Length: 457
Image 1: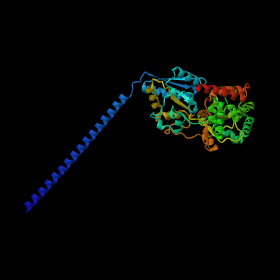
Image 2: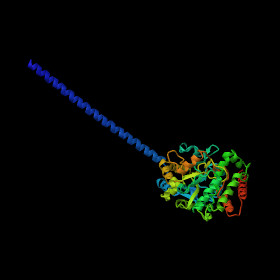
Image 3: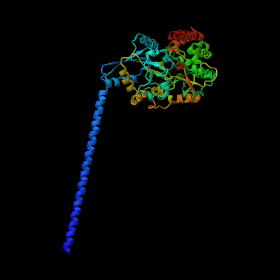
Image 4: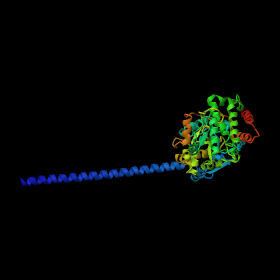
């Protein structure tokens, strides 16, 4: 009996050991199989990545040494543009030739080069109605480019002519309003004016307290027409169809009383000394200094200008400054803020022989990281054209938005054909020095526009 029990125990022990070894063997085999599967998967991923890299290398064209030409007005190219160009050149080997032209000559230079077949691959131009100054056959349709779906609607609309997207917008939609130093206003008990009469009272109070009311620089030509630019938005809002009538020739500038009144008021401000004693020698390049030092209380600028003052004069309190619409052109209050069609866009020459380089450049510029770099460096562009880049509105933009109850309307630059600021600025300069009248300024504008519209036909 004992022997039988012993043999039974030995049998059970043997079975247990066999089972244990079998399980261990199974686990070991399973582990080995798992490792093998992981190694195989890793090899497969590595092979796929290598294949993708090989395909990518095959897809990248050999463009090193070739040249991409880009033209722009001198104030449109900044340091960040040159930095991005340098990075693009390092990445692709492409040589980027940026042709910068004087502001007052740029448009004529580009039009001439388009006519002679010598235009650059890419050229900058104002968005909106100004695009119609360029013949459609000279511009490439960019509607189907890969970056288009990402553009904000205003960036598409401002660069679209007859249903075709003419340009890449990496700029901002903005307008021009009176930025005022809230510290100075608070100290003197001043608040934004309700009308032009109130504006004059503010100017007189500032002047009598030793502060220049408005910083202005007519010699740069492009700035003084911006008062008319803003007034036009109000006129077109109050009288729908004004822009259409001006563009068809049915209406002339001299027919619009608000334009004459605005010019008369600007001359009045100058004669009363509210633009400063030496305003004719003022320069745009000195605007930040003029406001940052507290020597001037107001300036007609875009809504992000105060950020540039903050950078140059961090103790000036410019981050708290506010804005109100320009009152010039009206006797009553203004409840409209005129805004652009999106600033400046980049057009492609229809005859370019470097379309592949253009696409490489646009792909590079529209990468999110490059857009973020661009807008971070361009404090003057407060509303990016791509939604991936977010910027908080300045106090100036927030305040003028509140004052007009978000009533933004298209300005003259975006809605009126042949609104040439450089030429108009010259006529206004003549008026300010007394060799011309407001009516004569408008008549000269009408004469120029009539000739240009005849040519365009």
